[in-house]
Image 1 (cartoon, one colour):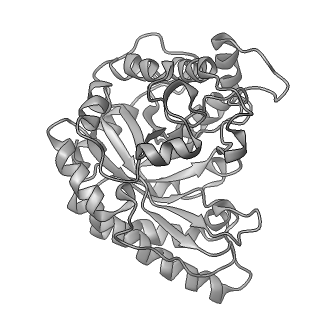
Image 2: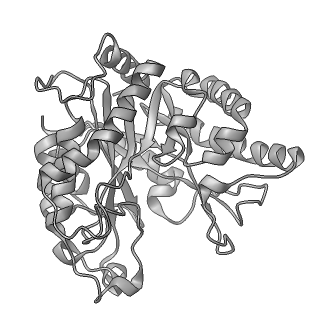
Image 3: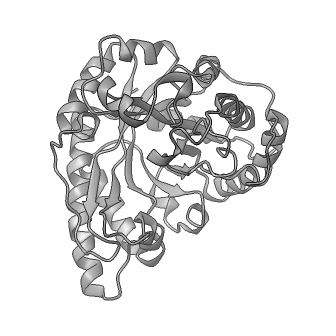
Length: 357
């Protein structure tokens, strides 16, 4: 779906819709929901991969061209237009867009910042500065990073572009910059734009949603307590209720549809309590895989949101492609994998069932 077509579809999606937090029991198959997966590929996907993803009902593949800075208070963003990581490169984006065109797969570029090894427990949400000079230096380098990828998005006819991801402090302290950046992006990219707000103390505090087309949310909301050892889909749907009510209210207040720019679950026992928790090497051999819980979490997500008229869809985190020798080093494939990828797990069938609706 090309940029102008998606913008029209998003407008139709939201026009006149109800934002009740109660489930809508009458799904509309004509709605142009984004049925997306984030693709994380070290190298070009093996033959048949895109066909498999299209067969799941996938309509969009999100790619993350990372930018880097040493610390949260380093006023400079570095990026390489052609990194070795395939799915982060311009070459990869162009090739995937060309290959996906005949399969109905569109590419969404979602730039994101990664802090270096000296981050001291900081992350992108805490990026910020104490002087206006440092803010302006950072904004200049960030602007160059974003505008470069906006031009790539235009080149590959990407139907949606993300101008920032999980940058809570920068968003809250420098709203004028983000309005200016949105205006600049629109001079080089013709399609709808969004910001991917973190689920925690970010989405509700963005003051420039009116300058964007879609509310983007990184939807790692906790759905259980750490002490919970058993879960049912019904329990998880109930746990979504307060978060869903907040998002429905935000959609109503702004007049914008909500897109989950990330939603995903690892196949581990604590995925409901800490869905954001990243895999570590020391978990291999000590943490049991729990593909059943991952499956339940996806079912609860789809049941809670997929038929809501104010909901624009989701980019599932994530489908991972690794060379076998690298994968085996510390993260097994398929049912024994502790990571986010639904590949080869019961969650893959859940995606297929709901993406086809």
